[in-house]
Image 1 (cartoon, rainbow, N blue to C red):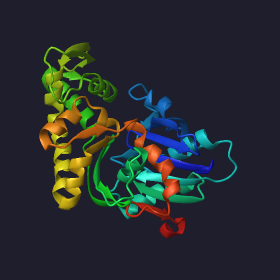
Image 2: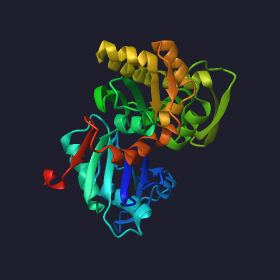
Image 3: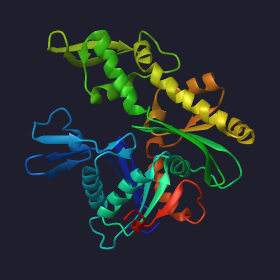
Length: 339
């Protein structure tokens, strides 16, 4: 991987970037803040994320990537350009880019990603599907005729795939992932306790309290927000069991996606997966007790990848060495193709 080569994990919640041989050099929220009066970008990443819920009316804080795809072209172009400038500001040569995309992405959505890369000043663009990138980033040898299964739980989407011989054999993507779990927690607090909380608080509750395998009613976490009845600050002690009830539906939607891919897979590959186990990557892989729940429900051994959050980003960087051998799920994109 040359010093000017850049790998980008274009996630709904976070953008991670790798450059040269330095590994992951940036991992920040996929958020941009701009002044609606002057139309100037004020901040991206962590600085913009800190403004959520605290911004005046004339400052817009937005997420231009929703459920794994670009929803606002202009903002996405500006955000990606700002991030690339952060990591590549001293380079005079235009970089090559590998950008990670969900496996379900359409041609129109691919075009939006390529246009964003073009606006950032890239000379060559590659697109790689999340399951392939995650496998490579986790250090799995996917070149052999042996099945490996991965579940990548990001912010906007969950990608489930079986990979063999450098290609995707079968896959399924759902728009139930980390953000959907956060929204479920927000709804639960509103409906049961009439307590209004923000997405950042919901995410913190999920990280600190989640136990999907054997939740305990005696383990609690103090959730602070605004009372919908009084309009004043309030707090509630939420237990592990209550949190499990709040996110149970979303958890089992992910479980059903795993089951569906297993049902669609050739029997020989299912046998391989029984031997190799299932690999979890992404931020959702860190949900407490999730690996044990999968083992109990589906009967498959399950492990969390080392550095699960950055697996996809690392895979995009390593993919530059495998451009000649990767099959389905990897594409060299010529910009004129979309003109």
